[in-house]
Image (cartoon, rainbow, N blue to C red; front, side, top):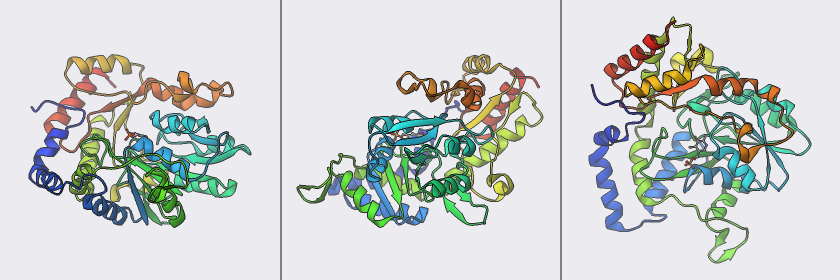
Length: 384
Ligand SMILES: *Cc1c(COP(=O)(O)O)cnc(C)c1O
């Protein structure tokens, strides 16, 4: 059996090596390292793929979130509501901009922001909502967008984990993750579903004026050379990363299909084990999941219901099976983000999830033998 890896970037590279090496050498030959033709071509191709009007490439996903919030003109003291169960980057940029992060609980099935908790947290100071499409499945965007419209709030999608996912609204309309809010941010960190070979990120929007603002912010607040109209940052996707991303974007649907196929095999193998809860399709995804790309499995995350999650982590390490606990501590209990207004009773789902979740190896190169070994080992250890 091939050695099992959490993410197999080398195996994926081997398949596209000739094409990627040629496009990287082309960048080296032309030496257009910054803002070169590869960056523009990638931007255009991603706009077409996502069916959004504007893609603004930048240096990483954290910058993308920060720049999106800067572009919306949010002011210190404005409250921004996001999910308690996410990667720290989401809340970090809110705090960095001196906005006030307001963390709320998540749904037990999708692990995404709970619309009831969200609406309860709205105050006159609330200006924006950041739904995170965690692990590759969209948040309940029917509810999030309704609430946002009712209370006149901006919606900033954190799409770092769900690029390529579809969301089907209750009325049947279908959009790509990242094309639903006022603005969205994504990451091209190597292990993401669309990852480059270094750091990268992008912001998406359908709003022409906001897109113009964002293009200036990523470039030192310049709209005309050496005229600095607003305070900006320096955040660029370089041409080598763009060249890699072009090759991988053309294969993204195939990559996501491989992830879904692996996820199906995992879930089948755990069927009937009552101590293991496999990833649940939530909201609109529930009915249509067999026929659409509504979950792109950035992570395949189980809930271990018999209290043995930590023992399982140790056992898998002994068997040389990598795994991850995303995330072991809820953000509302992280030192940097403590807030005396929080009440533990309001975080019952996140508090439970951090004790139960375990993410299994998930990438485009998993084979049946590896999946059988992983599921066999887990089913033997967690009887049910
Ligand atoms: C990866 C990630 C980010 C940050 O992306 P970077 O490119 O690493 O800065 C933000 N939010 C979520 C949910 C992520 O998973």
